[in-house]
Length: 361
Ligand code: COA
Image 1 (cartoon, helix red, strand yellow):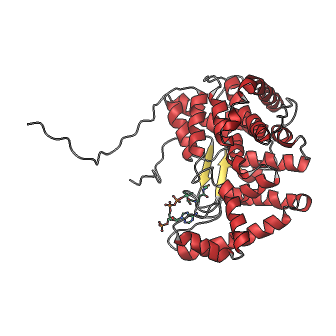
Image 2: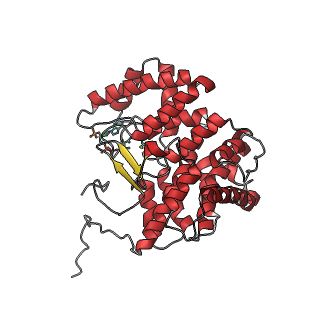
Image 3: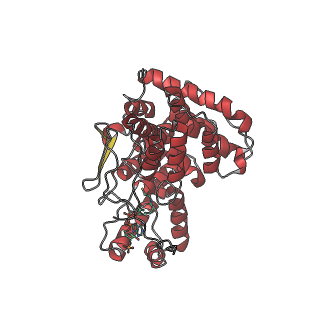
């Protein structure tokens, strides 16, 4: 068996399906394109949570409850805020989440949804020597995140961020969701399970990729020759960030959704020239990868255009994984609840390949 558990089915889920051959993502019976840009993040949280919590309120009430949770966690974490900027922005968010109670109720879940959205802008502002902007319980989740980041939120950017949060809300049994389910299977609380997901998401092979995409675009721009830069990276044994996927053998459908969002922003937010440059880099990378790795179909993944979208929304690259977590946390919670409901501990076997013990005479 491969070390990466390739092709192993480790859970049954009603939450999402990743069709790697066809390039389709289904979230609770809806295709990604049906949801992204059409449903608000709060509505998708409700879709994912449906059946996993008693007495789930309707869409509007749930969105209000998420708004109240933002205010509650802001007040709860206020006394510790001064300590967290000493850490990098991802670790600061993770530490803040670890301070929450470890329950399984809807209130616990909504606090977990709220923390990345509240702490990420607050920590970024504190890091810049600015006062955090408190959340507005009545605002839409994405709109409020941007308002807490920069004091204002244009409707176009809020819509773009909302579409991003929906696009990344769930994605089958990816590494962070699997980690979340393993912890949930022990019947530990939601905070413990979500901390496991956060740990797994951080790595550059998973949710840590979009920051390095910006570094790559900047380095290629400085070098002036995309193909030569990319070939050199591969010759050095490096991976091209924003390309390749364990499941997709065709283009990641989320890449197209996010690229369309960036294109729509382009005319108003001067992302147009960045997008045009990124498109030439994307094409060069696909050409170079096709030649360098002919045995593998390596296509553009979600992180490539995530980088452009979050940059346009005003987030610095070191906070991109935080924003990913702000979207994915809904999926993690739903998976944790689904796993808890099975009552079954996830406990696979390992095969011992080490030395035998010395035989005692
Ligand atoms: N750049 C260069 N080579 C890549 C690559 C990339 N982005 N992705 C895969 N490969 C190569 C590997 O080096 C390997 O080559 P080899 O057989 O010559 O050793 C081959 O493709 C298969 O690699 P493997 O690790 O088995 O592929 P995988 O499908 O399991 O990997 C990722 C999936 C996501 C870990 C991988 O594509 C990657 O590291 N991508 C870059 C990071 C990224 O964008 N992550 C976000 C994912 S949404």
